[in-house]
Structure formats: structure tokens, C-alpha cells
Image 1 (tube, rainbow, N blue to C red):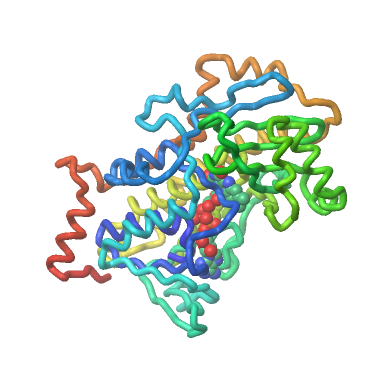
Image 2 (image 1 turned 90 degrees about the horizontal axis):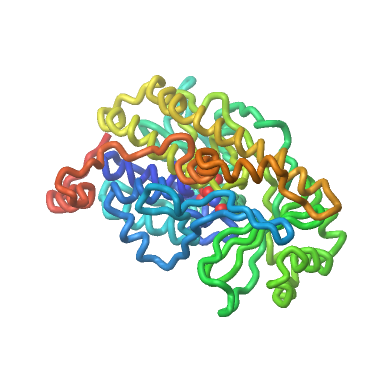
Length: 423
Ligand SMILES: Cc1cc2nc3c(=O)[nH]c(=O)nc-3n(C[C@H](O)[C@H](O)[C@H](O)COP(=O)(O)OP(=O)(O)OC[C@H]3O[C@@H](n4cnc5c(N)ncnc54)[C@H](O)[C@@H]3O)c2cc1C
């Protein structure tokens, strides 16, 4: 696995549990990176519950978001209400992504057939004819290393090097997205409401997303595509004024934003590879499909890719017989589901975000949209899509007959026997 983001760590854990020998290469020295998605959606929690891990994850410090709210002026409309969903986890868990990745990696490390190399930046693919045999990387101390594998999986994110090295082509979804996002944090105060969730505030030609992270507010200031230079030219005081106008309760705190370096620009893109594989190599997560931040579903999709890939590939990997048809099968199961979500994001970007950014007067939600959000069957569609995607993916081998944690028991057994399964 090349890349220790949500897709890579989850696939590594799932395959390690199934007895596959896994090496995970991560370019960074640790998992601590700011301005990433920090959400864990109900379908991921349900999958973790099947692995016997949800309780342990929930023991980490977190907050819960039970609804996504759109606020234009005084009017508030619930856009996605997770509390109505029939699941033990009717919320989006807000947990720093670094803690989530560390948690999953710690679980994987319980298996002797799992190996993690951090500070390992992959530079080249090893080819034999048209088949990928592995990768070459530079280790933390500058040594050049090579890993050979029955299958190489590119989970190296939105700037995927493996995508380029393999020459895989992507289709843009719906042309260029109309927006970019400048992310920054603002301090939280004790008097702020508990578990305030995620609120999208519409201003005059501006849009702000505020997410409650219990210790701070994560703010996403949405700007028209390519307007970051203009935003900087207008200066921080103008940005602070605009934020304070949309979120008057934070007006006293916007002064915390003193330097552009405190934030991070996300250039929003949305694309999907036509083919997710070549013989010996499969791409998953953002490496296969760059996702817009609309709805906060990138992590969910990346993990669902991992779940499906583990279900399809564990057996052929154990048998040392991964064929192109297995890789095609992963793509067939996942690509359409990703494309449906991207199409829905595209609709929201064109008809809500672009409209909001285009107007100089306060944005009003259209009557049609407000009506849609009230019709009983339709109103639950956004929450379902965010929570599960088109179809929830589940780990295959974890239908635990005993109700115990089968994978952990297996790991302990291997340790006792000092046995390792090798491809
Ligand atoms: C600012 C921001 C906010 C976001 N907010 C949300 C949100 O709220 N909810 C949500 O669901 N999604 C959100 N997303 C999207 C989400 O983070 C991604 O969709 C998700 O992380 C994709 O997971 P991944 O495993 O495919 O890739 P990534 O998480 O990008 O992981 C890729 C990993 O590969 C490593 N890597 C890259 N190149 C190499 C190499 N050559 N060799 C070795 N390792 C390499 C990287 O260091 C990284 O750790 C956000 C994204 C950004 C940028």
C-alpha cells in the first residue's frame, strides 16, 4: 500500500486481519497533518463495529454532529438530519484524522504480517513488461529501497504519483468546480453551544462552513475558483469582516486570524479515473477519484473503496493469484457509486454554491430547495448519501459467529504459534 491516508490504513488493516502480508509505505514521518477531513461517517462506524473496533474508537475524544444546517440570514434549514437514521451511530463523528489513522494503524500493528514504513516516499514503479511488480522509495535516512508485491495499491491521495507513473487517465466531473476553500481555525469559548454541528452560513456573495471540533471551530471560507490571489489582495481585515458578518457570534474572535499561514487553501477538484488499475497495480481513494469537499464524504468513499477491495482481493492475495479480473471487479463495484456521489456534489456546487457566490445581495435558499428539504422521503436523501454513499460497504469476513473479535483472536493465535503467512 502506498499512502497511509484513510484508504491505505484501512485496507492494510483489513488485509492484515485476513492473513495477507502487507507493507504500508507513508511519505510523512507521522500522521499529524492539519486541515484534513476530520469526519467519520455512520457507515465507517458500522464497518468498525463489525470488526469489533467501534467502541474503542468512540473512547477517543470526539464530538458528534447530528445535522448539517444551511443558514441564510435568519432562516435555518436542516439539510441532512442524521438523527432520524436507523443506525446505532446516527451522527457524523468529528475526530482529528491523525487520531483516526493512528488508531487504525495501531490495530494493524497487532498482526505480525503487517509492516509500516514512515518517511518512505515512493518515487518509481517496478515494471516487468506491462505488469507492476512493486515500488522503489527513498527511506527517511535517504536509502533507496525496493518492495516487491503480488499487488501494489496506490492510496497516495489527490496528487497521486502512482496515477501519473502508471499513466492512468481521469475524467473531470462536470467541468471545473466553481469554488476553492480557504480553511482556518477559530478559538472556541466555554459559552459556545455544545456539539453545535456543522452550519453553512450564506452571506453577500460569500459562504462559510463552520464545524464544531469541541476545542476549536474549523472554518471553511468558500471563494470562487482561482480567487485566492484576490482574497489575499483584499487582505485579512476584509476576510475577518466577511466572516464576522456571516457568523456575528464569532466577531470577537476573528482577530485570531493574523496570518495567511494559519490557514490552508484547498483547490477543489473532482475527477475519476477511467481505469483504476493496470496488471499488478490498483488505485483507490482520492488517487482514483479526487473528491470535492461538498458533504464531507471523501473519507467515507476512500474507506468504502478499501472495504470492497479487501472483500474482493483477500482470497486471491492469499492464494497468490491476483488477476486483472479481480482488479476490474473492484472498479466495477466502486466506480459507479463514486460517480453518483460526484454527480450529486456537482449539482450542489452548480445550484447552491455557485449561486451563493454569484450574488451581491444576501443569498436566499430557493423555495424549491426548501420544499425538497421538507418532503418526508426526499428530505432523508442527503443524510443517507453522506452517511452511506450509494450503498454501504461492509467487511466480508467479519460476520462473527461468537460475537467476539475474531480478527484479534486470530492475531493472538498467530503470535502464539510464531507463524506468519507469506504470499
Ligand atoms: C482541507 C481538506 C478538508 C477536507 N474535509 C473533509 C471532510 O470534512 N470530510 C471528508 O470525508 N473528507 C474531507 N476531505 C477529503 C478527504 O480528506 C480525502 O477524500 C481523504 O483523505 C482521501 O483519503 P485517501 O486515503 O484516498 O488519501 P489521503 O488522505 O490524501 O492520503 C494519502 C496519503 O498518501 C501519502 N503519500 C502521498 N504521496 C506518497 C508517496 N509518493 N509515497 C508514499 N506516501 C505518499 C500522503 O502523505 C497521505 O498520507 C478534505 C480534504 C481536505 C484537503
